[in-house]
Image 1 (tube, rainbow, N blue to C red):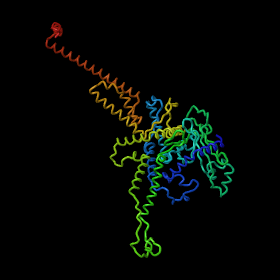
Image 2 (cartoon, helix red, strand yellow):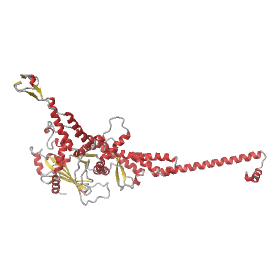
Image 3 (tube, one colour):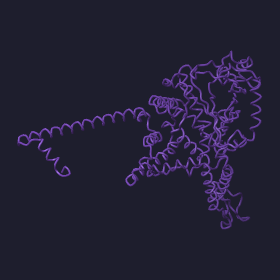
Length: 561
């Protein structure tokens, strides 16, 4: 993509987002007041006016932070692995070697995320998501990609980001509007990578710290032909996604064109209307209540000030001079009974009732009352599962969008970076071209699976009880497959479950051993019978009885005895 086209496209995107940004201004002011423009983009903390006070109620900021923290803990928990990988073909997942490779690869990927700044940056992303309704996270691999040097994540301020989507909603082109000084440009690209004008401004003390508009653009290359081998390391200009830095004023490139194997920018939206690129979050749904509550609190504080320190009423001639209400002041009055404080008659009971209703509405909009667990240690596992099930019902559309637009591409890019850098175990033979799927195993998905696992276990128990009355019911369940499914739903490690081939061999060996034991028992019984016959003949001989005589007598007996 040419520099002129990048500038033109960004200007068009900025013009079409003015109405959305006005909504973001209000949300930023009353929901996340210590974020965004509170710290001026072109200034520093020394220029922040800390005395400015616009927010009189903290219900919305606290509810927003609580929901963001809950989302991170339930979806991308830093304390336990929240995803697994599977092969798209189910028959491959039943092999021990393949399962162990999947589990080891998933563990290494999760450890790589833990060792990076992922948990720090994703916390900022969830806060943007629950307030603005949109968030942008960028994932980069440290180094040149040929060796493993870790991952790096950046939660990008939403105001700096713009994008163009394809027919399927996936990001085609991503733009970031930056403001850099000449010194920052030289530090990033070197003196040979910036225009002459930037070098001249850097040498001028009056212009060295002046900021210029810079565009960072990641664009998908059309008609790109992917290589046959995914692990092949490609030159930057031969990768499916290219990127450029452009000086917006002169439309000149900064540095050289680079490339990515995957789109490194992940844009997630809380909810989205058809025909709109940008989403909206819980804060937008209850913004009217937030503004009303804030204004009401301001009025209540003003009324409270009048009650605490009321104005004074005095009849004409009751005071000599001006009335002074400061500390240790001396006022000369003609008649003290003609001076009294003004009773405003403010109805704080009514105002407090309205405040409570508005606060409850805001908490409900952020799902705070529905999703918060009891602070009692008596919370049972069943109650926890019910809470997770409730969260799934409340946030179902949002969770599906997050997985599709945010978590899926993040895991796929993490796998790609590590696979190309040879940071994952070597693939077993025959699986080089197998396609992978992602399975989420965090607290929320696990609670959903636990319900299915519990249903299977209860059904098997009921079947066993019914078999005492109706034995034929045991023909109905496939016990092996049922318990294999329960093990997967419960998150049992792959190493703890034997594959079908091992089970068949084990059962065949047991059958062979049992058959051998039966034969040995039969032989032993035959030997004992022969020994008994021999002992009987010997006893008859000692008694003088011929065996042939006994056989004749038995033959002549009626019915053969």
